[in-house]
Image (tube, rainbow, N blue to C red):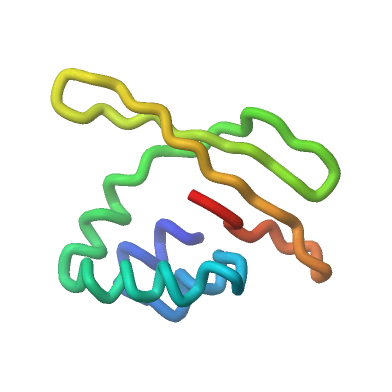
Length: 89
């Protein structure tokens, strides 16, 4: 899973869960996180599907930060091989 790849600090493996269009951007983010990447990965909450239509899906996670809850959306697109890849987050 994407989360497992982050926890293992496997940047190359984590990028396989992302759309090629965002590989460069998130590859740089993962490199900057460096030794903090496993902790960031471990802190990811479970996704819930908000809406799915054909090859697009909108998902969200709720994170507690200090005393507030924040909702973050993550968008997936199914590629030509049938894999659901993160398109935007």
